[in-house]
Amino acid sequence: MKVNNICCIGAGYVGGPTMAVIAKKNPNIKVTIVDINEERIAAWNDEDVSKLPIYEPGLAEIVAETRGKNLFFSTEIDKAINESEMIFISVNTPTKTYGKGKGMAADLKYVELCARNIAEVAKTDKIVVEKSTLPVRTAQAIKSILHNTGSDVNFHILSNPEFLAEGTAVQDLLNPDRVLIGGESEDAIESLANIYGSWVSQERILRTNVWSSELSKLTANAFLAQRISSINAISELCEHTEANVNEVARAIGMDSRIGPKFLNASIGFGGSCFQKDILNLVYIARSYGLNAVADYWEQVIILNDHQKRRFSDNLISTLYNTVSGKKIAMLGWAFKKDTNDTRESAAIYVADHLLSEQANIAVYDPKVPAKKVYGDLNYLETRSDEENKDLVSTFDDPYEATKGAHAIAIMTEWDEFKAYDWKKIYDNMKKPAFIFDGRNILDKAEMNNIGFEYSSIGK
Image (cartoon, rainbow, N blue to C red; front, side, top):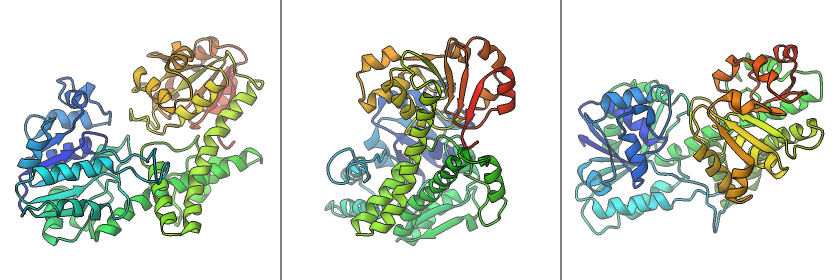
């Protein structure tokens, strides 16, 4: 099938960057990203590209280059579906918060709504591409909905999981390790492969069956998260011995069978994918009675939660077993640097724990607005919105955020944190002045020379 028009349902962290790059590399294809969220679409259409709803290095430049030419953002979902030959489903697939599978299974209600909408609107044959992270056999559910419309429209379902790391998403799209396409229709697979082939070499485009494609996505994230939990488990052992976790990580990372990536000890992983995908994997395994498999992967999550709690417990015990009424400055709220995404950020859970101990929290993040900080805390429903506003302050200046603080907790590895005038920060803090470096980005000797009581992960 020749593809002249692409529709992407979902203008989020996957749909936005992916479609922007596809539009840049395929100037003859019209790409329309649609979403029911009018505020989000308005932000994507803002003349000032610095105000895009998603921050990713390089994204604003690509949007500025393609928007209005062959990249469009709209709330007219039915129109875009009808005009397109290929439709990407890039909607949110959160973990269920209700009913069977609560806390583990993926909530597919948005995916199903998309499928039903496509079935209702489509008048011509369509290639429907799963782009959201989905549990194995979701394509079968989409296929069932689309193939029982009673019309003579043909739908071809493909699985094309994303393997983007937030903060480097644009580079990951421009130079991917691989593009994975799973499906039954060879023609449909090649239609999508040709789109990626405009900039990705054919040997990097893997063609599989649908089920292998869906499971590969969950497995990739599970393996990466497992490495983080593994080095974090060793970091705790290092703190009780004479070992240094950085030295251990370097030593094992030089083994070509292991490699150095994802071996940075830290406060733990966050983001929208790792925890959600592992919980999904656990749920699938349990649904087939594979309890040993489920227990194995669930331990990755348990260790990650332990690492976050251990960090906040250490902060409290070091501050003489009480943080009540004390100002704790948190540098960073995003789950990692170079993104404004805060989903499952360690900062949220550490702050929540400290707030339960009646601490006063001051937050500075270069890309996360105050509205998002309060929204993240309110979502937990640990306390009222008013209580969160009373106990938490947000700042646009790191020096103001740290002024008068008893301690600083570094939650995100933003590069700018390393370049601060730490002597100035020290002079304006309560004494003794503590730093709890949850990302191991500062130099211990330098901080100690300034006068800080410095503590890091795994040392």
